[in-house]
Length: 451
Figure 1 (cartoon, rainbow, N blue to C red):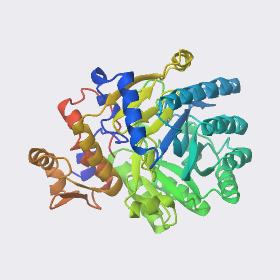
Figure 2: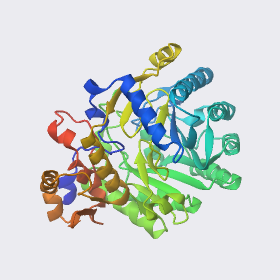
Figure 3: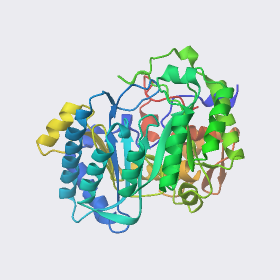
Figure 4: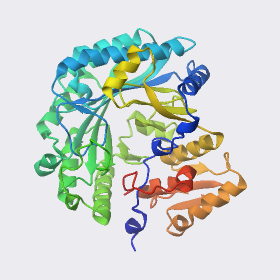
């Protein structure tokens, strides 16, 4: 049996621990969530500042590979009411904090942030910053759809402090684009990339996906060759997460038989990684790559890399506030998710209530495990003596027994290290620490496959 066949099982991506399906709603409440926010803010605002994730959920068409929460519409009159709701939510959080917040990071995600007009996005950012200070080394970023990102978007967001932009490319092959309903030409991607560079954006990223329907090695080669010609500072090479059981995500636009499986899919990743490394990109954690001049690579070398619901970041802020429908917030001591229902989101804000409907307050054991998983995801190693008892360590080593035998991990004293061979299996390695999942094995598939 190959390693791919052995370890290609459903597993979390670990943008959090505990993962969302294992949040303990019995011990969670809105008041407890607010207390953890205030605790985290008091500890870190002056030294770290806070991060803001702003979820802009509207898309003009449905990409059938997407597992994110979104609303499909062509009605742009939805922009202003939604922005007003975001600002109301932000005001509710500001009122809870002991002093004026210091913002270190803002990320506009979606949906499609560039569904919104440039003027409306600027209106949103300026209103948020009116109630906050901005850290000198701040990082403001947004996700842009190459087909509807205008030069005006790039110019006006640059003027309010944005210096990083990520463009969703996925794959350039027309057959694959048709299958996933994501249509954009190389010319469109080149145009927005060159605009961003000319304007002074210092970190331009392209998101690629392997494992898409009908995708073959020649498609990976063509996409990476085209991508390299534009020389983005960062790249993400994501595994397509096939989760058609999530209601409304549109992932039934093609048959499963059209998807590369197991060894075939892993070969696409290995080829993509090999090509990117040959072209000067350095591997960052799981599924990310960056040029040596990029700040993400520098954060890796300085062991300052952080991972949260936004993915990898160089800003290890303790408090991340998520604004918008379905957005997730992280106080380090707790998680909270907003309602996914747009009408309920508006209704709760009209009642001066934070639109949080679920969450989790971390126990001391959760915090220890969270730190270990974060270390593995960011630095590919963790010290088992940091918070774990002798009995805990014995249990972890036992659960990793086969991964030791397959040389995916090594143990040097108490330092557990992911080997070069083990990098593709980092999700499997982290699962050995996931005691909540081990204690309550899922009876149905909750996660995408690890490979």
